[in-house]
Length: 458
Image (cartoon, rainbow, N blue to C red; front, side, top):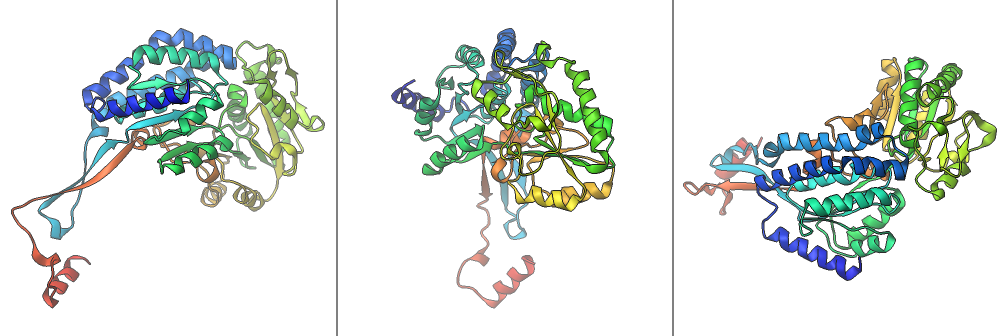
């Protein structure tokens, strides 16, 4: 689309929003049901597209994207009335003749920019909350997942009128044209570099923004950890979607006393979960583009590879890889890996690794495997991160809790109730009654008024 076409689309959505066509409960409910029905209709096409773009199996595509999206619609429909309801608050004693409440009001016309790594879930989940909150929406998917984007575009255009929800495909030119427009709210999921560009454009219009970014999420394996179980859960979280997950464990901080046992357990788990030859496993995915494939291979120090390291340029696959003897100065520690490579750094002193984590940008996630409550308490109190797990990886995303980053890993949060609130402005309102008007706040002031105020305001 040209910039003029995008500008016209934004104007038509703004006009539709101002007509009040998005506000009624019945409208929001029917739109969510229509989206759910659209997903059912296009499920096979979405699964095939995920296989084409990312090599995702039908099972992984459903569990991690399509099914999870459907579950979010189910939750939102169940709670929509209560989410939309006014919230009552207690008034101060001197305002006893008033009603105090906040009302949930939509922002207006929303821009949702989604990434390529979970192109169905991370496009449609924020859309669910934006619709539930009563907004109109323009979706901008990543150009790196073109097959999924086309299927989503076909589905969205069939399910919604363009003045309500519309999708803009394309690359940097379309991104730039969209960011040149004035939106009422922007929701962006992706990398830090593009996130900074989004935030810069949003600042020009003082547009509220949520950024879901990423970073180098540490995973600590304490000496007291259940090593076999830790290895199983770390392997799952690290290599799901070939490591192309924003909350994947980026690197392992493993206590010296259990490092050898952990590495052996990881090797066993990779074979158990992905077979002895993962690249020929039909359920093992691929790297999204040649550019990212080359970047990931460039991070691998072959002298430190203790497992894996095999790649296939034709299929853009990199087998699950483990590196040992890694230091904080190694190239692989200089950026978010976002691929199936697990660097392991040995430690002995917990304080030293806490200092390292805190001296670097706050990660989107942190994982700790321990059976020592003192270690758990120390790490949880000392480290700043978006969210995480104790004795597991990634599953905090599958709960009702808010999800979001902190510092350089993002700002704002969403999911379920927090998702509705993310796309909502809550207006604080006092409904004052007319049958009485206390004069205490008006001049002239007196010592009696002061004494009375001091009594009720303690």
